[in-house]
Image (cartoon, rainbow, N blue to C red; front, side):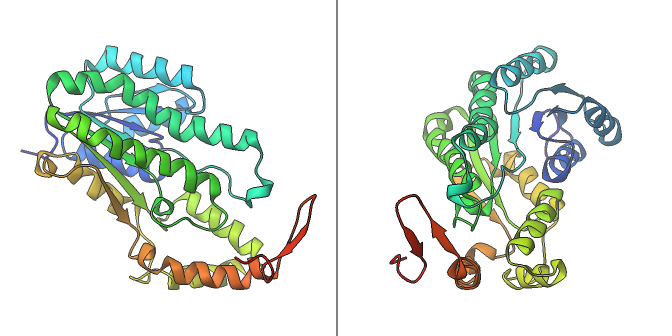
Amino acid sequence: MRRLDGRTALVTAATRGIGLAVAKRFVEEGATVYLLARDAERARSVVQSIGAAGFALADLEQPDAVAAAVEDLLARAGRIDILFHNTGGPRPGRFLDLSLEDWEKAVRHILYSAVIVTRGILPGMLANRWGRLIYSTSSGVITPLPLLHLSNVVRSAVAALAASLAPEVGPFGVTTHVLAPGHIVTERQQEMQRYRAQQERLPLEEYRKREQGAIAVARFGRPEEVAALAAFLASDEAGYLTGQIHAVDGGFSRMVPVYSEIYTREVVGVQQWVTNDSLITSSDSGA
């Protein structure tokens, strides 16, 4: 018998990267898997390639569309036993370069989508007295990362949601978990490497080597390694675990203070920050 036989799972943002790896692993472990995606062609291709049960379409930034998609999936699936909530990353940037619209967009995309999907499927979990709520965030919820203010703040709110839910739903056999992946080889990671290399005026390969040097195991992670942990947490074997943040980052969160110190000294330290009221440099800001 496989770990997830007889269970029905929903994976959001499931057509690439970590979401795709998790959906595939859940299928391999015996679950009936549904996808929530925004690209019909990609979703259809993934369903066929991994043997998923189906998909619904929604842009995670559109709350009404997300709620409708969850309702549609519940009508087809009957119930959802396992949620793996995954999203793409919000835009990077310095704090003063981010608009209020950027913040609102990130909140809708990351936090509201988690709340809406959870609200839709949780009643069934409570009624069945079994469920798994797994939220994929970032290592930035453990230690905030440079130039990722939107991700650091809004994903931390999702981690707080999971922790807040744990004692409320635990007596009903429902557990909550936060995965905090870092430096996993995905399109998002590659985009961020190009962005940071450009910000630091470094050749891309030189930047990648330096980034890899900040990871304790001295390599980048694979989406399949995140999926392996997700499959365990979704199983009966993990029934006595709940309300936790699980770093999947090769030890990066242990070393990030060193990484941040280097970043601050070499990049932020040579920049001047200009506001309407004052000129502030790193040497006189008291930071």
